[in-house]
View 1: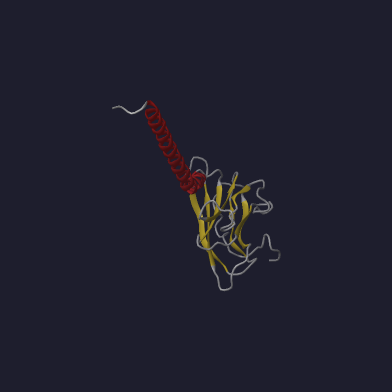
View 2: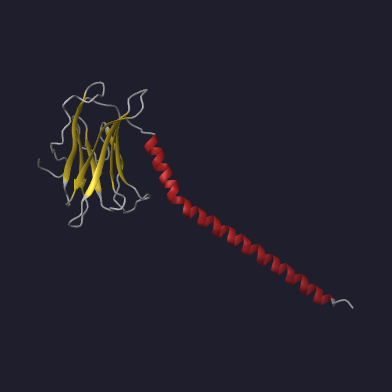
Length: 206
């Protein structure tokens, strides 16, 4: 004998509810997986944007500063072009230079890299100063090695490194001159002009 009609109706309703529940579960799991993938990709997308910025130098004179990624301290880069005011975190742009990246160490950082960079528009001849400043507090006994690189990119030429050195920072508010140098009208280093004689740009005194 067949099942009563009311029992068949109940079975149909049960099948429809089961199918709907399975569909909702699959949809929810898919959505959760998609959100998880986006969250995992965000840091890589931020790094990719930074790498693109580095490879497409928007200026002619490039001053970069790096310090170890495992030292989450706030170091600042300051650059002074000939006859201009210093450019750094509280003066982000001048007639020639712009600070494109102010790195606070670990605070509010989209990447794990400790890195600051300034670019110039044009290559004015004259005297330049490149300083590093230990802005934030630093534990006693800690030394932060800061690598400073100056490169140049002239029209129809590849980027070429001019200067590279390391400055050691050991105490709060320490300001050191990585380079003082002169460029001629062609953007070449003036012979004998490169020195590390300290000239403070932000902390006063000489």
